[in-house]
Length: 398
Image (cartoon, rainbow, N blue to C red; front, side):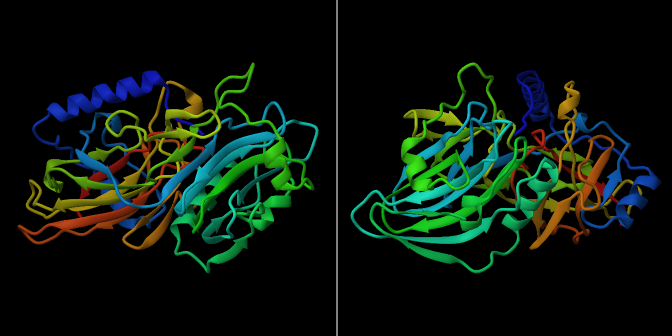
């Protein structure tokens, strides 16, 4: 996982406060060449927009609120199993619907390991486990491509569900293929799993030997702290979070005649990180630093007023990476679902380096005078990328 430094977040917060004091969005005209590139681009294409500094754009005020979606299980700390085999997440679950977001790298260097997730029945009645979505590509050292593959599989319409009956004192893997799949050091093991249970159960994520019984390993292996002894902190966090779905609605209606603006979520400032509880240590208030594993459901209203020349403006919705002083944190890649279509960002390259490059998500045509259009978007903070990943609203002449 990657997220911006504390200094970068502080600078971002200062920018947000400055933008909030602004009365209107600052106009900025696009060059003829930029407008031509926007008109010619397809969703997922990289488009250079050198006409303004991205960080100088005002921030569109948004209202982010939790809804009644699935609870979130995040397993990303310790991100690397640097001290060897162990249990990285263990949570007792009530009956209900859950999403597990798993992001780990196997260690040590000299052995093949298996990282798996299992549901354990610790009660006296059978547990019906229904896995409604299982996205688990093969582990890879190409972190960005793997993260995009997972996001695409997650945001695409789900396939058939799978049901298992877990007997008392028994266990079942969330993904059978993962339970014996060996992976080498530095390969990322990443997946998203959505499931439902009808009885209380325990969810465990662990690293073990490939042929070791996972149920026995979950009981016998050491329960790992979030920060390993003698190691630096890694990963976005772990634990059980009450909700993994967030609704995003706009404040004032965005008007294309007012100029470009940006939308920022998962920055830890204007959009605070969600907090939950770590079952291994019993710690409350643990943060998901980046809101990884959450689904943001956007609904932003817009108007397309006439420009100074009299032509009515459309709106291009763009994805980009925020540049920081840390050169290792200037790249990003992602996937969104816009107006019912999944868009890989970027589609023809592994990553985007940020300003002046953007990736087109979708163009929105002008609406009639006095009418209001709606941008609907499903977004999740992309794994491996530096956060936040701003979304730009850029007016252009169609």
